[in-house]
Image (cartoon, rainbow, N blue to C red; front, side, top):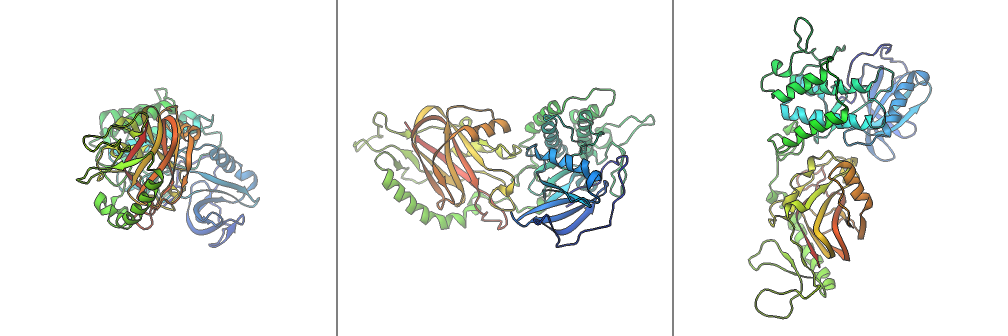
Length: 510
């Protein structure tokens, strides 16, 4: 994909310098091996795909000649960007000045730029809203540090094959302004809806300018393309209107986020995951039965042995019983000795906690919110439904995009937790139980507090070998639990992807 695309021309930007061009296989800073020259951008920089030979991860290398004073703006922008962590900002790994050349090393994104997508066809309104919402959130995070991004345009908005939307390549020159960034978000929405970029730009890959009337007034998106909702058309037009003061980036992000949330369950998401821009790039959705046909059959035998062993250790205080007709096993306390009627728990004896859909949610501090859907399927009593992560490339650690994800559980009141039973869709996850007595907001910041402040209970279960994993809560009295997953098993239907799901979660407590 194009990792840095053409954008608006900047005064004083030199032509692309070709002397001293590196070669394929050259290793920069004894660490970054150059593998393929991708393209040259409008700011005199070469873009390479490379590999970090130490961490064995793909990287994008943005390189310019010369270094020194000529590269100060690029390097300063990279250093500033590296301090802002947000799921919709490209991660910056390194910034190096060698004098005769300078380069920035950042995250490699498999996918396409917004420019490339709309040159084929404008996005449908739902997709356009989601893209603009992601960009607005990223810009708001940059503005919160007191900086402007200065380079928001369709070439720096990247959409990964996995649906992730990220903003790349901030600039630190004097032309970067807060208001300019906000206007550019409106331009991104306008471009996504119409395929036209409402700003002058040059270059071989330039998009057509927006349609204007004879006096130069911008045509609304719904006048350019049929089917654009009036509220989206008006929003894009208002943000771009020079006669109107632009909102702040966080206000615009909140409004776009609200619109995106209303569309979250719309058809374009489907089973393929969030922002599924190109269904042909992903495998067809897999039914729960088909998904488990390989991994689960092999895991059941091992799971049975592990469960029996653990029950033997825990049987003094914890007993499982299930309906004789099959179905999802239920957690139950030990029998009180009666041979007829429903068992009555002794005082203080642990019982299964009744969990409703409003008592579970997904904790994803570094995510974009798209994987928060379907949490209720973990407590619906149906083992054929599941919450699932999306498929991740580049390894089990969520494709190196996040430190983990988890399931937050509200027990309704403080209880002494004895056991948590988790039915994974695929064996092999790394998981740990955490607990606390504070409910933080369901936001990225709140999720980060949950992960940081909840206390681990028991040890980490690395590569859990059984489909059913048992976690001993040690009888601690807490109201909130966090099942924290830090590593994913390999998908059973896509060998180069990693994914996990949870069919059911049950808690035994008193």
